[in-house]
Image (cartoon, rainbow, N blue to C red; front, side):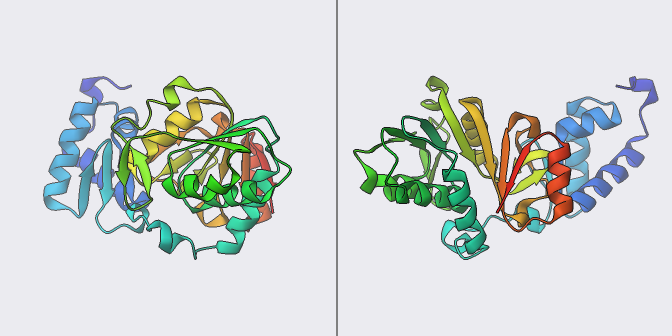
Length: 264
């Protein structure tokens, strides 16, 4: 980090910060602090000043470009029709990684929901424990009881995804150690890691990642190469990426980053 005497003038720094927001659709306070060699308090002050005169919105942990597509989140029902075939293929491929007797975490969202549907269709599975923060997924898996034990995390209901978030959403996860977690996100990037547009969901996804011996990210090609505001984890914290519709160059970029790529 540069010393205080080596800092850019505030006006120049703020112009560059605004450029970062315009280019990426968002910025993180911690990243800007490291880049410009100033404290996070200074960065927050910069963002507050920029917000007063420019089309950005301050959010917890950073700022986003006002009206940026990267900060819009589709309701669960709307997202069901987006890349529906790819999601079904991803769900089937991901479900093949599960064996009887395992414990599994299933994230919220339509792609993890496809994993749930594929698990339900596998009548060879028995003695499976599935932990989820998704009410939709829990109800999807109900017909598999008693072959499956379905554990719902608890928490505060978030209608957009029919999911459970803070407060209390991570309490159960903090007490568990599962074999594998299937986690979705709105961005998967070789350098930026796995990210998500909604910060409340991101907190729970991060807890899921930390509760698993193995983490698998499930994402269709539209999520690849994107970085959103909430960081779930570095790519090297995931063992496997299950995707569909990705071109060879994208697959190679993730393979070089050290993650196993299953493309269907």
